[in-house]
Image 1 (cartoon, rainbow, N blue to C red):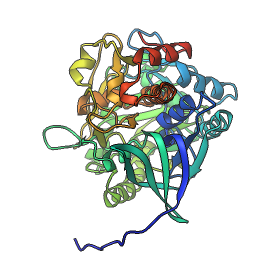
Image 2 (cartoon, one colour):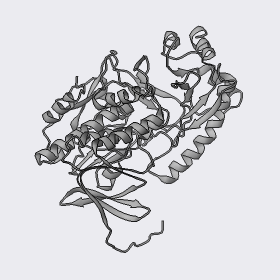
Image 3 (cartoon, one colour):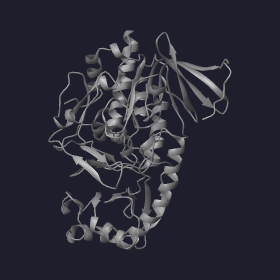
Image 4 (cartoon, rainbow, N blue to C red):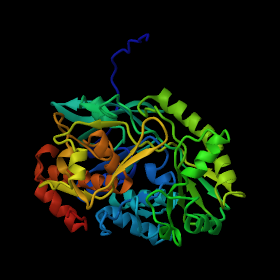
Length: 455
């Protein structure tokens, strides 16, 4: 690759803040809101898109507010977010699900509105349409970031930075050790472009699943689960096999459909592009193009082979692919699948999670799911880079190995990790210590006082 020498230059410092949150997705919203609870702190949230919410806006349900035993394990600010949505008829209750522990359906447009309202309420300064292009290292620790805008390159100084980019962008730029994928060949879980179909004959779909279970099988999910209310289908392998035999190129092995809030609405989770790396713009671009092509084939499959879809139409498509996996950092502690499956307890627990290890295979169209009997702890140390100071990392890019991250990547858990990171950043600044030195007991107390569940 040819190179270009960029001359050194001075760039303007746009802001100087106490806490800077980079990335306005599920973890970023919670981190910024939690950090801003000390009204004496100046908190800023930056985002590359023109709205907040990230994966909350692409048609996905929020999974695993409930744990394997049916009790609620994600509470605190994440639950308050749902309460805000429910107050405007924009979220469902948490419904038990055999595969996913629970599902909570939300209106993605209202999720954007609630996120904006929360930031305004907390006094968080929001800046969108900016990319973080470099980490600023000051006095041996992260002291802010460099952003790219239509006004040119600018700097934002911060006493503490929280990386909620999903891809660990700030951490990577700051020299934090990062990894991608599995140990075998670095294979990452493939992303999905969600899309919405309307005019679905829901009674016909329910009848097929409930009363013709031999033909329209749902793997491990019992037929009773689909008799009423919202649901996720994960099955119909027979139908996919028929379609493949008839020449359709279906990218997944199972039919994954999610009810929406409207009675004739289904969100389709069936595009899958193997080999996509969201940290590479070329790879990400090719993935988006391929997913749009796959969408046409999947829609033909649904209309021809799945009851209820004959007259359904595509109503809207998510604005971007949902990324399941990219970079994860190496933190003070690396959560493992062994920790998850053993339901390990930690003294520095900052959230409890209940979602199983759910690995979408990097090649092929299938998944592996490993279930636990109860919820498991996530320790504060996964938010703290092993060597770099002044930085916390929350969300799916926190310190987990490939298999553990397959369980902790869901939005409910990411929201709880964001709240913990923002709370820790605030308390560390109040006490005049680095985030790596914060009194975790104080963080736990603050989380519990806000309604969090720590086991």
